[in-house]
Length: 157
Image 1 (cartoon, rainbow, N blue to C red):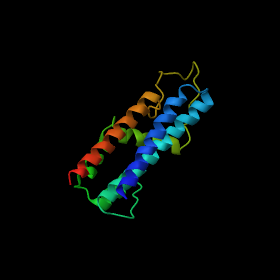
Image 2: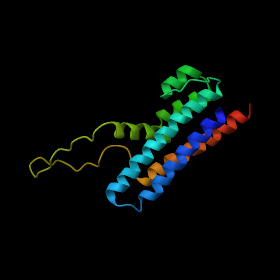
Image 3: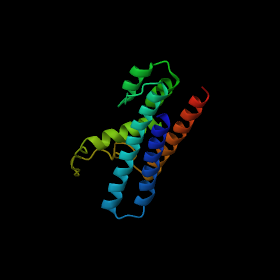
Image 4: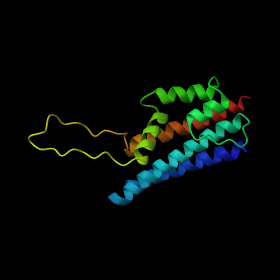
């Protein structure tokens, strides 16, 4: 059953990457739909990854929905739990990036204040996760490498 979850996670990453590549050629509303679809597929791939790890630890029916649930299941001292917890703490990691993207897609955009000559103090950059194609592609590639590393770790057993 582990192989099926590996294939499903790989498939989600492939489809996410495919949408991401295609969006550069689309008009804006379609490009945004493809970007959001790519992010959703990446998030689904991450869910598959959590289930894959649980399966590696012989939890045949568990489908953890978060890193906390996975850690509770397999223990905080396991290689995967430590690795993913460290990624979660790193601001620029693929795991943290996906967390930010998930949050940004789950909630409405923050309404911006109107700017006029009377109330302008400084110019601020837009807040939120980097939703550029290159940033998403970087996270997808790092996730793919982790999936490969995960397979290598468990093939050692």
